[in-house]
Amino acid sequence: MSVVAGPASAPVETLRLAVAAESEAAGRAENQDVALALAIGPAPGDTSGEDFLLVVADGMGGHPAGDVASRIAAETLRDAFPAMPSGDLGLALKQAYRKANGAIYQEGQANPAEAGMGTTLVAALLHGKYATLANVGDSRAYLLRGNGLTQVTQDHTLVAEEVARGAITADAARNDPRRNVLTHALGLNARLESRLPGIFELTLLPGDRILLCSDGLYDVLDDVDIQRTLSGEDPGAAAKALVEMAKGRGTRDNATAVVAVAIPTRVPVVSPLPAPASRTGGVPGMAIAAVIAALLLLLLVLALVLLGAIPFA
Ligand code: CA
Picture 1 (spheres, rainbow, N blue to C red):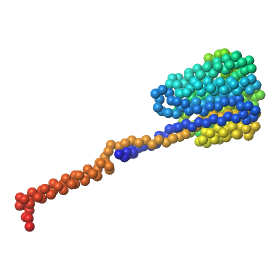
Picture 2 (picture 1 turned 30 degrees about the vertical axis):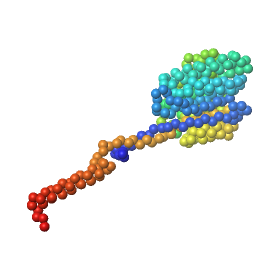
Picture 3 (picture 1 turned 90 degrees about the horizontal axis):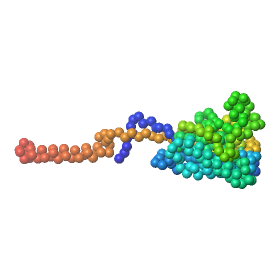
Picture 4 (picture 1 turned 120 degrees about the horizontal axis):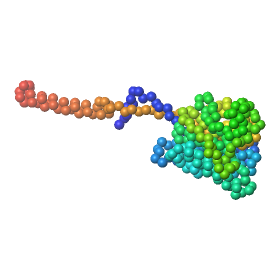
C-alpha cells in the first residue's frame, strides 16, 4: 500500500558521525603519540546506534619511555570502553583515567628504565549528538561550529594556569618558552588528583567538527589553519591534511589529529493520512457498485416486461 505524505512534512535535520585518526612521527625520529578513533558497541538496551571512542595520548618528551606511557593510556581506554557505558559517562571516563594512571605508574615502578614516564591523555565518548570529553595534560580538543573554532579542554600547563590567573595574556602564552611545561600528566604519581581529569560535555549540532590533537600539531598551526582544514566533510582527509600542514610548518614534534564530523542528515517526516476514497481501493469498489446497479436495472426491466408495462415487440 502506498503511503501518502501529509501536507506539512518539513524534513528534520539530524546528524550521523564519521571519525578518523592520523598520527606521524613528523619532526622526531620516533612517534610517542598514540591516536584512536574507534566505533564501539551501544549501551545495553540502546538501539539508537552510533557510538565512538576518540583518544590522543602524547608521551612526554624528554622523559624515558614516553611511547610506553602513551600506549598504556590509549590501550586502557580502549579496553575500558568496548561499548558505551549506560550510566554517567564523565564518571566512567574518570574511572578509566584512574586505571590508566595506575597502570602507567606501576609499569614505571616495575621497570627502572621506564621510571618517571608520563603521558597526556585527551579522550571523547560520542553517543550520537552527545559528546563527553576528558583531559589531563596539554593535548587538546577543539570544537568547530560554523566558522567559530573554540578550545573545549583546558591545558594543564604552567602558562595556561598563568593565563587563567591573569598573570600573562593568551597571546603571550602562545610564544612563551615554558608553554610545554606540564602541571599534570598521567603516570607520574601513584594517584591522580581527585579534580582530574577535566570533564567537558557538548551537544553537537549538524555540521560540527571535533578535533583532538597533540601539541606538535597545534603549536605550529593557528586557528584559521585549523578551521579551514577541518571544514571538509571527510574526517580522514581533514586529519591527514592537518598533520601534513604541521609537517609543512616544520613541527619539531610528533603530529597527531583525530577528527569527528557530525554530518547533517535530512530525514523526511512521513505522516500517513487516513485513506480517503483512496486511489488504490476506490476504483475496484466503484466498478463492483456499477455492475450491481446494472444488474438491478436489468432485473427491473425484465420484471416490467413480464408485467406487461413495457410492450414486447
Ligand atoms: Ca608532543
